Image 1 (tube, rainbow, N blue to C red):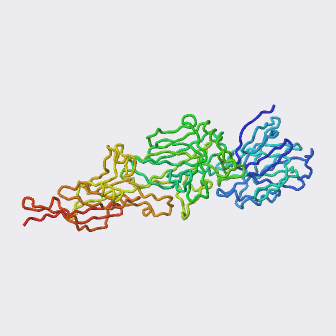
Image 2 (image 1 turned 30 degrees about the vertical axis):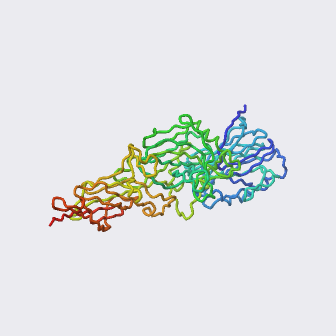
Length: 601
């Protein structure tokens, strides 16, 4: 009794067989190097004989974890094909393969990407091949022709390695010579002793990356100009692009889970959507183009925790229905692989397979009030992991994670940050008496983002929900907003924390963080301590992206005399306040005020 199977096979390291008719088989190496061992096993007669034994030999090697698979030459029909392997390749003992005999359906194309229907011959006992110390295993089929499905099984010897994908082999095999460009000649001979080289790699997982959705569209094209750095402030939305490759076994995988451990200063605000995206290496900036929108329904195709408005770990779990939708949205190449040995996926509409795609999850977050917590001065960074079929790809700052295909590197950028960051700046000032250097409490300051806004009284505002609203933002000047102010404490210290940094796009890991992200802000004293006059001009301060808002040491003299009261006799005397020194620092500034009374003569 023969049982029909209709399923797809993974492609990495597979062999593609095209069937024009049951007796006419052609094989092209799409992963394992195939070569012919003995010249006397090659027949010029295109009709198979009934006496020569048919044999399959597997040569199993482990390749270095960072080996570029594109450097492997196609098989050329010679035992010398083994010389194409890198010197570091090691024979792998203990690798196990199962071999099933199949009967292809006439007129159907059999390849690892779209196997098509075929029947498994239940009269043929499933065979097991286990490699010895030299990494080889052989199986003799006797004088009968056959087409076989070869599947690697995980063993103790192959744990932690990416197994070779299932592949098909026909014995005897039509001999083709493959050139360096992958072109094959016409087959005129049959080979009865076939050798294949399915390889194992250190399992790097699928490529993943994470960027911030800036939406700049600087090149005028559709898509998102993605950044590794951005800036925000309290209550502002930050959308993250979670980008990951799509595993070819996604439909049949036992799980597919995206996990994002949010910084405590971020609240989850919801999944904004899913899409297929790609990068064009011709772009001047890394632009994530849309290849296709994905219609995935929460609860049916995926589940997500926690609920919007909460912080913690965001977990997106795809259901079997959702994984099937992902599989159905793409086709996989049989000849193109990423640096991790994964088959490149292409959107269905990309019939020429020009742009490999990744799954993009647009994850929404909101900066919460914890950015104002004392000691929370540094940037927010964020990373995630992807688990497919029980195997987890580490965070995207791991050097062994393969890069996203075709993602360009901006010019003059030596290193791209591996983890995206949201930068803030902090401002600090200390108000003290010049006369005795004692701290002055009770001075209230507003803050503006430009000198012009400071002079016009257009200060940064705070909405009722705590969101910082800058001039030009939506809802600026809403009725319930109030100016963002701080009052000097008993130590004279006034601090503003979690303000927007300078927007330094695509900064690299070798950047001068202070130079790239520091920016000026302007303090305006709106309430002076009792007995002191207001400082009647904006005071420029520098917001620091890394340091605490602590004042220190540069003095700027202010020669102005600021009267406490209008300049006319008051009960026979006149009061004057002399504002003497302003101390500006890297982390903020200090005001030094001197009060001096002149007795009326």
